[in-house]
Length: 239
Image (cartoon, rainbow, N blue to C red; front, side, top):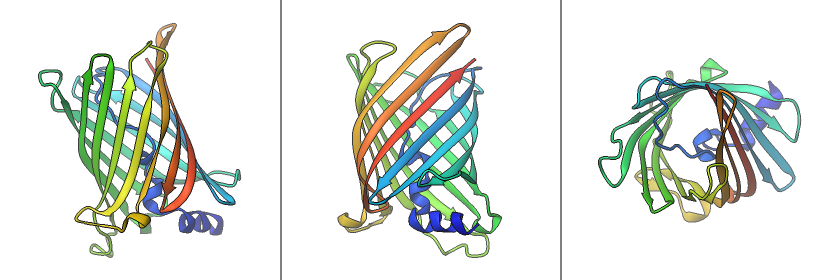
């Protein structure tokens, strides 16, 4: 437990949010189940934090995707420790009838230590295309909920941006950017904000009866208001 406490004091709860590293997009996966593996790490000066995640997702309808996943944290290559369980639900509000597709993203996370309470996240997901190039822009609000201290935390604002070229099904390069600016209505000074960006590649292939989707990104910038370089990886197997 002492090792876990050291990790959580070095990395803020906001930096542990998976949506700081993986883009939420608006795809119809009706009646498709998936096994979802995600991994990110952040290389700070003299220290590395990594977070593998494993989840199970399902397209309940053409407009509703749900996923439950567990998250671990590793410090400097050591043994991982389970820190929380998340439940994500995304709802497509439009499906091609407008130039820009809109979805509502929600996420509820429960910490391993029940005394730490819950955190919630919600916000709009926007996606459009120009020719073979896809553009994404998401704004998410995040808030920790402590049952014994309901007024102890504030609502913070995060963002996700992506531009991706649909070149080949198995090779779609692009750029991603993620950031946290502080309270949604009272942003932190710029030097205390976190912004990171870099190249990414996405692809999907059919392997037998299953479809495999994969995504890789290399991000440079500030994480928890400290300079860091991050690698992210996501692999989904749909069946």
